Amino acid sequence: MKKQEQSASIWKSLRLGLIIFFVLIVFAYGFEVTKVDLKEFHKSSRQDSRIRVTRALARPEIFVFEQEEFIVLTPIYVPCPDQPLSPPSMDLSEPYMVVTPQCAAPGELVQVEGFKFQPNIKGPLSFIPSSDPNNSLALKQGDIFTDDQGHFSLTIKLPKRPGEDVQYLRATTRRNVGLPHLSQTAIDTWDKIVETVFLALLATTLGIIFSVPVSFVAARNIMKDVKSPLTSIALTLIGWPVGIYLGFLVAFWLNNFTDALMVNKLVGLISFLICLIGAVVLIRKVVIQAEIENLSTDKQIQKIMIQIGAALLAAMGLYLVARLGLQAGMVLVSVLGPVAFMGNFVTQLSDITAVVTPGTVAIIAGAVLGNVFGKIGQQLDDKLPFSTVKILNIFLSCLAGAIVLAILAGAINWLYEIRQAQYLLLIMAGIGATLGLALTLYARPKESLPIGLTIYYITRTFLNATRSIEALIMAIVAVIWVGIGPFAGVMALGLHSIVSLAKLYSEQVESIMPGPMEAITATGATRLQTIIYAVIPQIIPPYISFTMYRWDINVRMSTIIGFAGGGGIGFLLIQNINLLNYRAASTQMLAIAVVVSIMDYLSSSMRERYV
Image 1 (cartoon, one colour):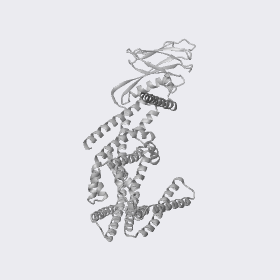
Image 2: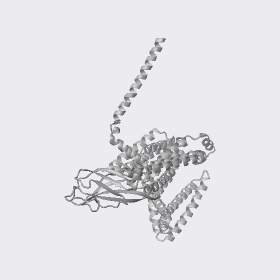
Image 3: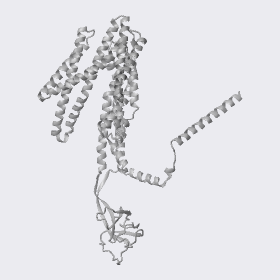
Image 4: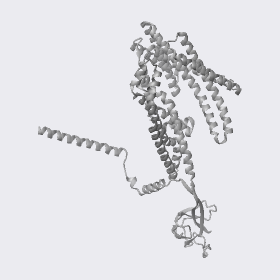
């Protein structure tokens, strides 16, 4: 027994020693790969640079004085002239310099003494050649440092700039005048730090708008119960691209129609009011019908037509308000004066509305048609016999697969400009049809498939893939899209915020208590009602917390994306670092630290109050 314990103890010690030895080997190889070497660290030049940069960083350029400059000249001859020199005349009541000797050959040493200068000041001492009347070729010989009595002494080596005429040594000193005031660096830093805060605010707002709906799609507990028969899924996949295509055609027609209406501004304004009233009335009818269960077929068709009419009126209203807003914004810019930014705000919002309306109309049309086709598929699956559904599934699945992969082929062709793209289109459509046929053979007719989990996995994969791309890379792409400036930073941080917040939000949705959902579902509530009354009340506090935290992150990340031209304080910081202006860079770093600290305090206060 003792031998076994002794053997086990020896083995444990040996194993521990091997583990330690292996860890040492890993770190030794890590030192080799990362080239850890302190030779550069010990160099005197590196030490001087460290001291110089550290001192500059410790003196941020925030306040400056107006300075008064004093220039003192004294003659010198290089080399000595043939005639004997007489002492230069000088006013002994003012600062003056004495050079000993008064002449010398190039490369010789002379002593320069200064008297009656300002005490305890520093300035450059320069050699002014006689052939340089504008002092553009002044050669710095060193720095003077005066003592408490305003005296200095400096030995210099004369440069190889001989001349027959008299040359000069020039001492330049400056003294502070008046009270300190903010430096231009501090003013520029303030402008950029304000830009940074609002850049982060707009990016966070953009992230909230898109990430909230995506978070429900990316939540497993919400999507796992979403199931549909294959007939409904196939028709939905067919309805979406057809609806998007029709939506773009309708948007193009509405665009031209509103252009015709806006020839007269009064007609355009009246048309907008009519669209607004009509859309409100139709949407109210849709809401009333949504509360009535088991609508007849005629009523369902009527409901769909009302939805389409409301969507058309709303889309035309968006086009009209975009055009009216552009004109109103330009007028406001010219009349508002100091608050002209409000007019620019109206103009830019109107322009954004005009840009996003076609895509919005197309997506809504795709959603409506996909929903209608899906309901038709559900009814066909419920009413048709088993064998008919199987045949119908084969046809619809092959068609849906061919359409989806044909669209993918079109995207690939646009990206890579493939020659003879029709062959790729046919091949991809054939592959899609084959996959659809395989799905039909795998799934039994009238069987509900977990389409919700499929959407969940696709969404999560997209979020993870996009989130892995750093905001700096997104900023580089955004700069190509919209140019250098803070707008590119808003786009880059906004996209990164969407995917990051969507992941955080979805994980919070997955961690809610299931009891309220089960209780509300048991009452016969729809999925939308379940989300509104069971999910949203549980997620509002953490959503606020995550949103404030994301705003804090965006403020800090805006420093990095500024390096790629994304605007904000980082754009100014990288400029000063490249120019070796470390005092100005220290000012920007101090501003970043202050703003981040304030943001952290505000976010913690809001989380404490509302979360």
